[in-house]
Image (cartoon, rainbow, N blue to C red; front, side, top):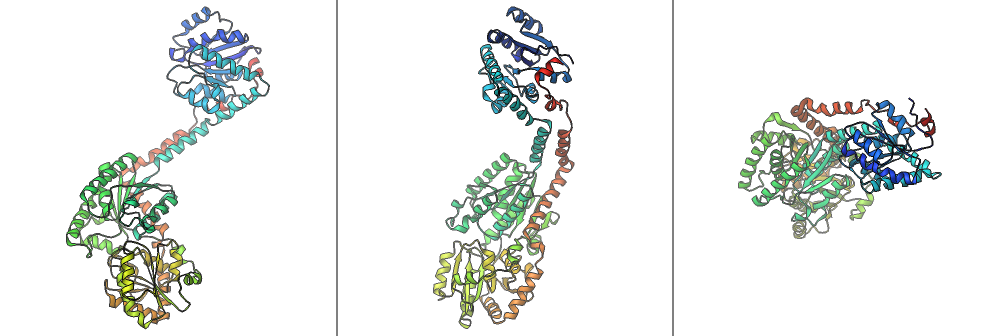
Length: 618
């Protein structure tokens, strides 16, 4: 290619269609002011279009025939030579400049570019060097910026810096770099977005199970968020345990979506507002999956997600609110609502077989949509042996003390009062026995009062809310969970993983975890006498304690590991998505393949390989 361009001229280049929005008339009108200070200036206009005759007339009128040339249209493979030969490129557009590809092509060849503050040109040049941006689209502004930039290029050292910066900046927009960004966009768009909805942000079995699921999903690459009632709205929102789940969730870099109107108790006014609030959130954020937990969040959340058109709706049954401890009218209401809400979701996850059987008995949902996924704990945190002597001493427990403990929030239904009465019944025969209650909640003061009434103040310790639960579990000689109702019993899994003998009630999922006399002891719910007898039996028989703890630890397999739980839930999401969306899921992969394919112009970043003098003479 013979460019036949003079080596002693300051060449200014633009590559444009000859149409009004390109502002070429203003550029030609700017040239007299440029030539007045730079008589060697030569403007080359590459391109063709309906304005050609008009532009030729303007060049003649301005007496710029020696300084402005209309080169005409060129083939793509000829353009790099012109970019290389030019000292300066200009993008003079006055409208509709979406990106300005020619600007990047010039920069990729190592040629500095100036431009007007229109469309994408403004964004590009501001990132590179704001002084390369014209004040406006008028001839005076064009002339000023052209002259200032030519002066910089003439300065020893500064010109080379501009050439080098141009090339380095353009590399950010190379085909491989842009293909990678497009791939990232598609990958992000294809990521499953999950919203977990939990009624209260409290440290509880269901709360911690939800946290473990979210943690595993985030690490697997899913975008996970957590919606719940704000801690300040809770009756017991001032204690640490009431807001602890929020802190733990934020520590996992999971976004919190507070639901202002969500309450645990039935309240039609608040519940309708919570429904609307959650519906708005689902519509705005466009989640792939809404996964609800607990009865209230499950009913409100499933309906809101269904109304918002969320593709996949999943509910985990941690327990049902129509247990025997509830008032009759509430049992009837919640049973009816659970039957209705089962039609609003794609899958029901049960954390134990007894809960599954209960749902079948109560005609809640259809078995074809059931899945059993055990609530998981971080087994490794509890299986590792710990030296707890210092921790025992911190509570005032001597080496001879037999420490009985319960890990649970101080709520109705966890059987704390039952445990205190059973302990009072058996403790006269076991003066070395001590009771450690780990957790906090609204029953703290009533339980303290009960301790005083039972004259157990010197033998019962309230540890409050603690984050070192694995160490505290290892401290115990006997673990107890005498719940009146229970979905599974997370504290049982933790005690078993630590190799501790456990006493639990025959409620909910607890019999799914404890085989009476093999890996723990079972008692009738609410029976003070049976619990006292079980405590005495374990206090009297160290060999039995060791045997039950050892068997419990051996039988506890990876079905109850939090990592496996999270993986099973993800697999369930994928199965439902595949069932609903089918091969549509493959579309992002097709787009990625297209984005990664070679495109025309991929040679631009390689074009400027020679100094301008060599290019001009070729």
